[in-house]
Amino acid sequence: FFFKQKTAYEIYQCDWSSDVCSSDLACPERRLPMVLLKVWEASRGGQSDVPALVAKMLTAMGPAFVKFGQKLATSDIPAEYKRAFRSLSSENQEFDSTLFYHMVRSTYGERVFDESRSGRKIAEGSMAATFECCVPSAETPAVVKLLHPFIRQDIERDCAYVGRLVQHINTKKPFGSLTLPGNTAEVIRQQLVSQTDTAREVENAAHLRKALSPQGSGVHFVVPEVNTRLTRPGAIVTPLLPGYELDSEALERHGLNGSAIRKAVGLEVLRMMLMEGHYQSDVNLGNFGVLYDPETGAPVLRRKVPTVVWYDAGAVEPISAADQKLLLELVRAAFTDQTQIPKLLAGVVKPSDDSTERLK
Image (cartoon, rainbow, N blue to C red; front, side, top):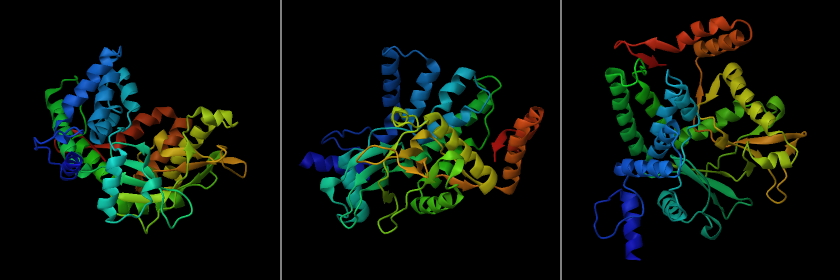
């Protein structure tokens, strides 16, 4: 019992100095050796693709480095690295059920969920994890999304390192002529910090619900309703809406065209930007699911079209009128005069005082 309490104390206080017992979790300040070990294990396992190994390393180091790799994918780097970095997504498996119970009790100060029917982890990223939970007063199962402990401190520290890395690349030129926007780290920091703001995510869910086309491109979109009574800073509660992944083979087994559904989601993202003036900056397959009946497994159809659940509303932002106009011109040029595209793209960046490009 003592050792379990000591481990809980280490997690909660981020105090890793005790020599009484060793925690099962790696110290947040010393992740790099563990990251290199994972890369070494992958190489020992026969994976010798260097770009893929670098992508694996960035993924293991956390969300700031994932964002950094995604932005590198849009720079002038070798094609094999672009392919590897474009597939980056934040994932880990460190938030277990024990930590779930601890976080729930420290967040609410009371037992708001039926713990005998709560705690199954549904999904996890490097910033948060979602768990199935049972609210005694509710008739249907729910989901609670919990931010990882100390995520804000991790973001600040990691983004400071990314800033030094960008400065090194721009001054030492280890990759030839590659120059990165001077404010890359600050843009990453702003994006990640905004995704840790629970109140903002609740507002974003409402904005996303209004911006989405209910019956867009052959699918029906829904956004889970937030339970504002149980939502707290760092914890968001919504109904459990089970969904098949957009690339799941189950879609084909039920007679649905997975490729057409993925294209419909992509078109809806584009439509929101061009017509509604909003964009979702964290669009990946893990944020969507084709709703199905938990008893039969059959996809839920509305007016004979599948229902796509848009799970994550943490990164919805408005687009300025100028950027919206630029996007419309880019789309128009793609279909009419593609020679205009380089000129239009030149407006995406603007020179800074230190002669390096800056992200808008």
